[in-house]
Image 1 (cartoon, rainbow, N blue to C red):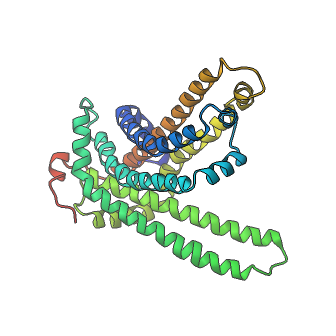
Image 2 (cartoon, rainbow, N blue to C red):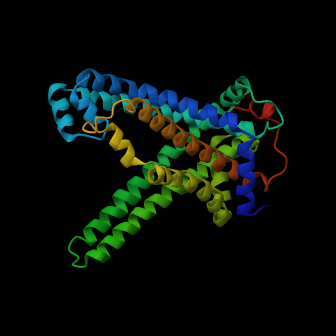
Image 3 (cartoon, rainbow, N blue to C red):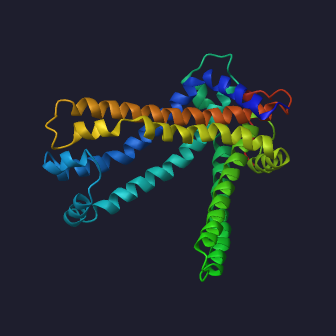
Length: 316
């Protein structure tokens, strides 16, 4: 069994050889985002048109505009929320199915990448990935029900009349961290369950989940390292984007009182490209997390079973 650092190093090399799978994952989610955002964009464009308010919205959010929009376009915000919710619900199974294709790519590094093979892998593991998604949703519900509502509610009652605000804040912060760690642990276990299915060990999603749970607990320190470091790199990417982007220059060009208009399209295009690069980077690190976990998991196992035969088993 390799160390956590070695697994991460191998995982980063693995994802560099699987760039095409990252592009598929990124492209699918961009299409979903377009489906969610297009109705909102069209509604805002039709309402503001080429007014001064449309120029003001370029520099930031306006509460006055939102009030005006909600009063004059009744029901629009509810419709947009429903569209976003529906697309979000669609994104869950889509990404669960795509995980099979991404992980399947790790077994085929010697082969030339093809969309046909990628989506055949998606179909081969689809049902088991979808059932793992259901298990994950149940686990998320349990975390919020018993940790957030249950334990958190008891803490709220116990600290209601505390005179020491710092102590009360520390206790509530501890509950928040416990929720965050619990959700991260669920994600990690589901990742290893997905890897177990694709790697060829076990035919059922229940068996894969229970085996992944035991694997994660039995090797908890190293499992946390190979999951957390690539994941935190994706989070850090957002912070870097926020720090290095010259927001004052962007606002100066987009500002309505600067008299600068020719640079507006260029700034918007550059900002859009930069944001898409950040999103792509986050998906890259998501695949890097899978790859690091894959390297760690496979270092404890024998050779993988043939992906052509493992897919013929029925989902449990």
